[in-house]
Image (cartoon, rainbow, N blue to C red):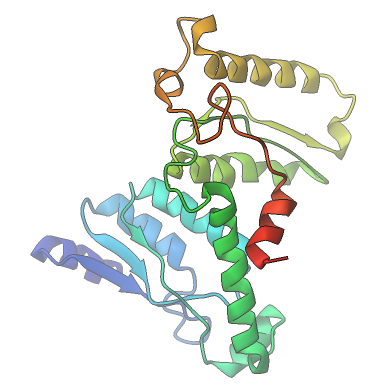
Amino acid sequence: MVAIALKAEEVGLDVFATGEHHNPPLVPSSPTTMLGYIAARTERLVLSTSTTLITTNDPVKIAEDFAMLQHLADGRVDLMMGRGNTGPVYPWFGKDIRQGINLAVENSGLFKSFFDAVSGFDKDALAGTPVLIAATGGTARHSLVLDHALRPLFAYLRAVVVPTGVYAASEDWGAQGLAERIERAGAELARIASPAATPTASPTASARPARKGASGGFGTVVPFEEQLAALRGE
């Protein structure tokens, strides 16, 4: 399939699309891995899925993986989602094909809500907005989500992300280094958010137009749970 994609680029075709198959011949079982490799070997070919399984995949993981892929492919990725109809595959992911339609509706709605809540249906909502990525978790391995999921997602939304991310696992609380990292990240955010305070501040941030109803370029912060509730019509 990689050879086909490279030949498609060579002869001038516009799009290469791949399915997702977890039963033999398993071609491919990991579309994002394959498309990431193809993206590195091509320059203009649009890379698509046909389809990504919204029923057996975690919608959060789909959002993270394809945000990263879109970032690496310089915006050449199209995502097509479907529910799949191979019954034996569903139990491998802890699912029941008899719930396929319900799973598709629920997971598609959750997937879409992430971007609706972030962008408010406005693709420029976060353009130039200063962002500090920080999180806590049970183990250190969860820190990977900061640089391998959240950072590319905010880059795709054209936010201005500070270089230093802050992550604290259970063992980090009170440990040496966490306070210093928080202070460094906070200082970086302050420099970007207050461009007049330093000549090294981000020019993107200084040129950012104020949001509607904003005071000083920043609107009222609405808690994420309230945004999700509004999307559900609650």
